[in-house]
Image (cartoon, rainbow, N blue to C red):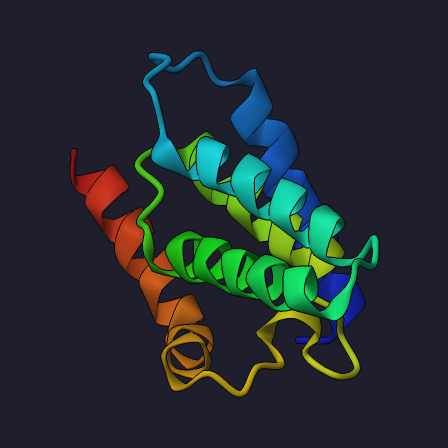
Length: 124
């Protein structure tokens, strides 16, 4: 399926999900998205070298948590996929382009991770 077809189908699914009344539960993925967004923004503001490495490490840890934590709701899955789509980059893998082995492994298994989350949500 081409990128445009995927996005239009995903957009339709997101629109349907917004109309379905669901029980609101706390999904840890929303907080992790906010945490990564803040860490990523701080890292890209530019600081002196000694602070830059600390900020880079904080951003990578936030990304690892984001990629390895299962969303627990459909809205959490949608939020995660939207975030990765907007900030993940498409030509050079964006936030997935890392040298850390644990992040590279998490990025490689990301799609299966999301599928596993959806199976668990649909079974509940």
